Length: 458
Image (tube, rainbow, N blue to C red; front, side, top):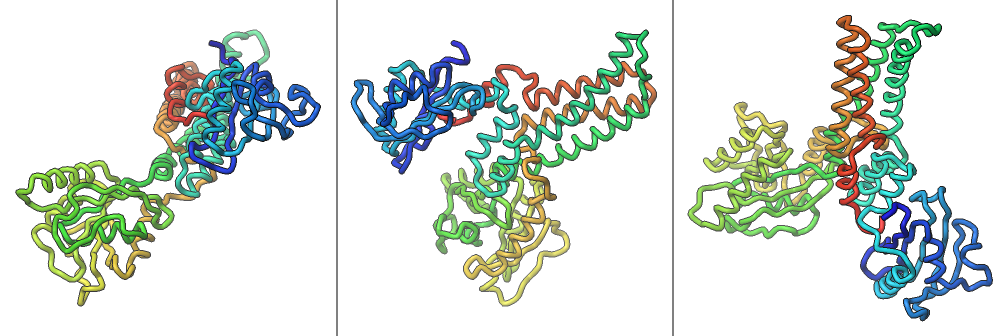
């Protein structure tokens, strides 16, 4: 099946809404649209200028009017997909949209696969691979910062940085190969010193870009955060206070939380994936023991551990076990001293403990939550970076990492006095890695994996 066969899909949500859109793309997009849409005026749809809204009727498979809607057509190559496209902007009835889509299928289109519109945009050269991935990130964004970064990537921010490195390396390699291929021409001699400076500058650029990944994965997915402590110490109260509503059951009965409870919240400008865990203690209760095992699994998968103990009471043996578990995890952990409103005085941990921070707070009154927010922001917000220049997925980070390694090896070889061909072998390897990043050269199975996570209609 050719790339240009005509596809169609509902491009808006599945629920009832004010507006619903049916999107069509491919060689016969205008023909399919003309067979399911009847303009109200005398001008045929094929004669309509690009990107002009036309009022008319949406027809079902039997030619019956099922909606009064708007249609707009755009002709290749200046479209999202690079192909002829049409959009039917209907009233947002799921039934009307479903019938309209069936009519489009009967008129010659087929169902678009997940991400197929954006995949066609990539294959037609309308966007590179980092921009295509940014489309999905923008749809999935849960914070303003994530949306801003995705929008920046969509505009080509990452590509501009890496393309500059790619073109610089290409120029160096081309100069060297010209000397080899055309020895009799008057070509400027290869300058190893200038080459070394170019490689070190490229190394600096790629290193700075790679450093954004730790922040980028938290920006996109949130920081996995385990709230741990003995039973009835205030873990669920802390979860509810951070969320701003009663998500977890809070009672005076130890062992109320028997399974992990997961929610997302925003704290100090950082998105957290909170996991409220079962209390850590020795128990003969089989169900509670399963919850405790899941608590230990949550600690192992977390990036941040909030170890909760009471602010005004001496540590119990169970509290000591909790603190040891936090320390042994090797993760960033904060000692959260809870129930500050009930404490006669603050009792700091002794100097044998090494949390990243100790924060006294009351989940009931909210005192100290702002301090916790500042601490978390300092730990995970990261250094400011221009919009769109934060790597957000492992594929991007891997490609940049391989390019950086090759550039560094090339620079080290040049510095050690190796022959230019050895230096340029590594430089060309770096170019191949950067080509995979943006899609200049990438395997079909990688492309398929990337677009499989998209929603249908985008």
